[in-house]
Image (tube, rainbow, N blue to C red; front, top):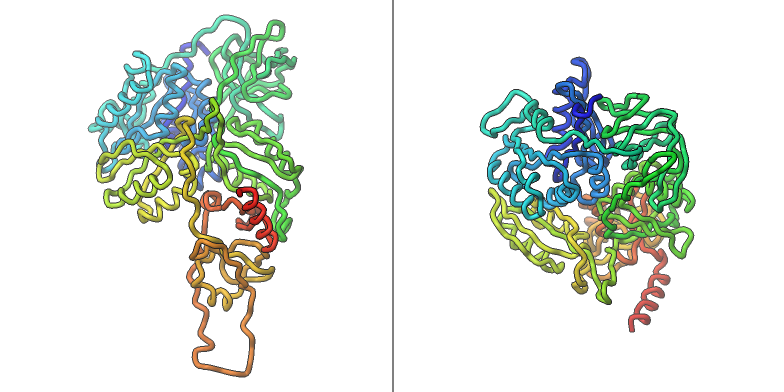
Length: 607
């Protein structure tokens, strides 16, 4: 393959702006599938969680051939919690397609991923997508993108970008949003014109490992881009580790990306992406280099985690009933396995051999890991998410985020009240179509649990996004959950009769006929204090009858939480029990006298 017949591009955008749909249309246009093949939509979002959540979580590679040129395409996540994925795969690309919604325009996470591309000096083609939307404003959005790039200190070459307009859903892209074209070929022509071919770097072999793959036939594969030199099968190589140490190894097999799969090859040239088999003990960020005179590339810098969470084994009375992997060894091995491919994650041992502190980029980042583990059969417990506080120059600093909320005008006052209660400072308030666009600077801990409140107070009409900005001075205490918990008194089964008598005390999280245990949280109390209740009590049978005594129990439907909502709801003295079949809240101390003793001890320490 000649040098100029190769392009490496990454598609970057805010979540739900149409990246994966656009890749679908490119794959179809380049005739990657036969006419009889059923492909469905969102071909690259092949992970169960990605399809359910409707977002991209893992970066993926595909390649197409267009007009005799091989184009390697990398589909990246749009959510800032998965920024670790974006940061490492941008090293494999020479240019980016920046996708922006024609109505929403640049959003907080657009800014985040774009800043990374500009920092790395990538060529940029702007794609204004969804021009078929009502109220769309493509020309304004194009100007907003220019202003954003200018504010991010883009170079003159980057600011001289070309803009493509179109609708990925309707399968067209063109130079003018008012004139619909027949297909997406104009966009691919712009890629060939505006994205440079890989630079011809002189010198010995260098290839940085940017992601991993696994095959049950050949084992672990190192994926990356050949930065310099060429790579061949059976070639002896050195692996330069992140700490500078060097291990000798040999390439057993080589694969390049071909369509949605991989094709085995003998040699990979400078600039192409490939998967290498045979290298032992490698990690993301290591460099595969020359055998005789190895030179390592600068290890990629990944932003620090901003949130921590305690993971511990399940010690509830229902331990081992629903899970397959339940011991601390299982938990430890699984978390360390995740570290191999999840660069933005950290795991730290604690004083207890059964517990681990896990550090991530946000609630979404940690919840995807938790959901993956429960689907694999793991059973464990997690504590309340905590933001990571640092001491900088003897000052207590905490992570601060930019929060953007688009909401109908009549709810804007309620949103401002909710966010300012959590120490948020409003920076922008402006109309955007028929919505009001609000931006705030808010501590990361203020966002935990905020989404549920915002959606409840706006009848689900708010669109909320946020991204990490910086560490700033500690803003003081925030209001915590203002309702107590309904706690089970004894082990048993929830009885409709007992629940009916107690339904005025709060909202239940469970239905009648469910197995429960002492210390489990089964609802939210209507007052601030916790309340221990007995819902295993049955009706006593007598031969006496009275008017109305046999009225049927009428219970409102239980309040059902998603995993993220549970993670945001769980209190300081509570655990969230996670099994493949259930999510349960419980107190850390199950017995009431133990909770009282722990509470008294805490009060003594405070005094």
